[in-house]
Length: 362
Ligand code: CUA
Image (cartoon, rainbow, N blue to C red; front, top):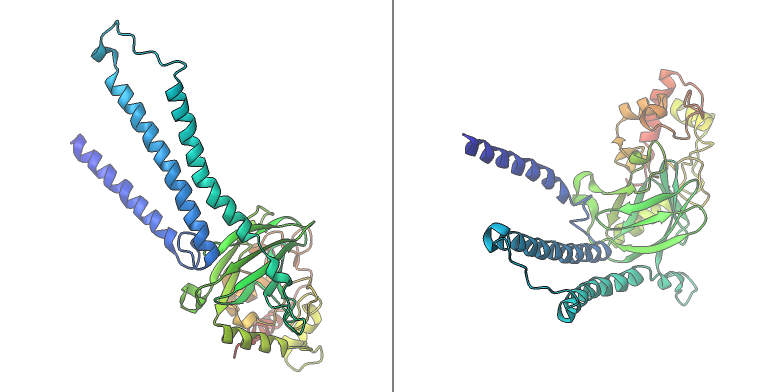
């Protein structure tokens, strides 16, 4: 009876672990399934260090258990004094040298990789016309969203980072308010975004994100930054180099695009009156926005980084953003009414339709 119960317990434990661990392998989100040079090397370091640490734990445990079993009083007798090894040169050398060797095996590749990942010299390289050759993205983390500016292309977007596959993409990382941390688990990172300095690194995206769940890689804020820290997500669309160039061109073509207060479209007019002060609808330029740039809103796959990308959810968000993202800056400081005033249901419906229609990907 007891034996059956034990077996059953072991079985349920294994089942629970299997269900739990099967969540570790999602390609759009998992550090354990990297899709780029940096992520792959970081995983290798993780496996190397975990392997060595496991080896140490196993060896020490085996020696401990052996000593425990072999040298019990009941086995060796009451009056036995084991061989005294205090001050033994041989033993002291062994247990000093082995850890040093293990630490060197860990340290050499880790330190080498750390310097390699921080090598951003290519950011300053220019071609014969004086144009920067490397693709650079300026990332600004804000409460609780992400702005992505492409200084060499003269475009700006938010919440959804778009990158080409197969080349190093360089990042200037900073924060506008408090410390955040930029992390795309399946690609590499993470690195802090600070207010007082710019951190730099690069990432490589091997795979087009189209085939993934939602068609994007998931990005996260990895530094506790406030009540909506856990909701401070962004998405990454990796495109073939040609598709990326086409996207850049369509973004540049939105230059001057705006919303008209006199528009016969109630959605556009409401947007111009209530939203345009903080949210731009042109992706051209480099001016930072008070709120996320919405030029590509219709192309995104999430609302506010994590909600479903539907008109229904958008309407609910416009009615009460604080319900979904506590502490976000679309609300009065005390979290009461949205700062853009109270809109009628008709205006909200029209606004949602207008915003869902903002797109550069036809
Ligand atoms: Cu931003 Cu956590």
